[in-house]
Image (cartoon, rainbow, N blue to C red; front, side):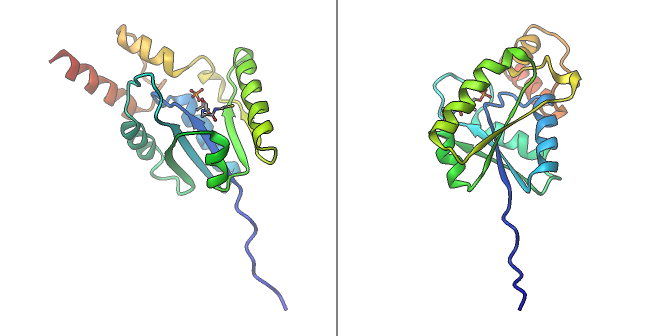
Length: 170
Ligand code: PNS
């Protein structure tokens, strides 16, 4: 007799602040969505520093960008990432590595997460070369000072940034 049990789903979490989502993040999420059965973009909530975009806005933006990707979910989380990953039954954490300068912080986080949850594997992915110098922090700085950010963030992020700037001027 044959049983038709489905193979287990490989669920990955891609955690971050995403304030705002950049083209580098989009590139990593697209790569992850091709490798894993499901990729959950997990936005860190409840942080003390005041973000530019609220949690709700960040969820809306990322959901809009990935509305055509059935295996990309967008949620917020608080508390320990490893606890959230367990709750989502995820076996992988995805992090993007842009340059050697990212390595030390990422290495510490990956090993701390492994200490806390030995069965959870961190997988590092490299974005396309043209995105290796982009960070959310630099996007905010350049935009605030009047620099060009077209192509460095998805169009919806640029629109929302312009709307915020306009509202501020009123
Ligand atoms: O985009 P960021 O700000 O580099 O993302 C950092 C993030 C959200 C991955 C990290 O701060 C995190 O995992 N926070 C949740 C709390 C936690 O589990 N801390 C221990 C990490 S080793």
